[in-house]
Length: 262
Image 1 (tube, one colour):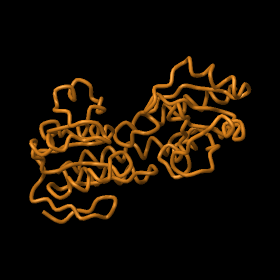
Image 2 (tube, one colour; image 1 turned 180 degrees about the horizontal axis):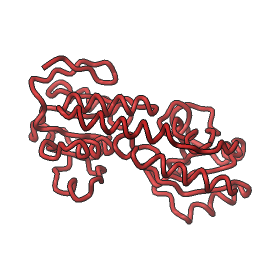
Image 3 (cartoon, one colour; image 1 turned 135 degrees about the horizontal axis):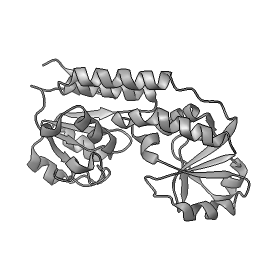
Image 4 (cartoon, helix red, strand yellow; image 1 turned 180 degrees about the vertical axis):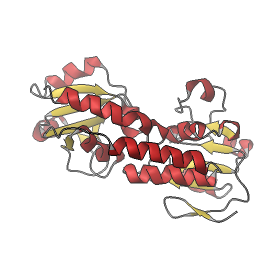
């Protein structure tokens, strides 16, 4: 087989199409099943929740940041799929000494499409991967939303509050909802109560993951920013950069319509 390169431009040397794949990333696990690689998936993380009826019977190799390396070695994969942001660098470097590891690095929609295409090629599922990228591209191209003029704060964590800042995948998707990111900092900055008031966003989006925000948290934030519109949103749609993107355009359209009513 040819020498492949991952999204960090690291060479990944495979001797044949992988037959035992371990996925250390929930969104990419869902993608592998979508591509029809059910029989090849040898291990997934405890956070890999989709498709629910299939992942429940797959061995769990720990959490994304705390992989069970001895178990992974026992499972003897011929390919591990990881992500620069979601997995621990030291653990991935250790695994790379024993197994081929393909690492994704996704910060926008083009990067997600490139990831899907590359994984399709490396796993021998190029045709369904190309069909998937075409469908996602078409759906986003045909998405018609109105720019709301609203500045949004997208919170991913509580105690302390943490937000999706610039140069993140979530940040790249906010314009598809007609929103601008109210956070100027990069990555995932901590947001104190004082900083929250200083940012003074028009909209606060409370994500369902990684922190499971609920209705009760709306009141908590409303006391700090009584004029802000606070909405619970599906974190998987905003942050899962695999086949879950098929659900995103319709969801963003619906969210955009709701925002225009505020």
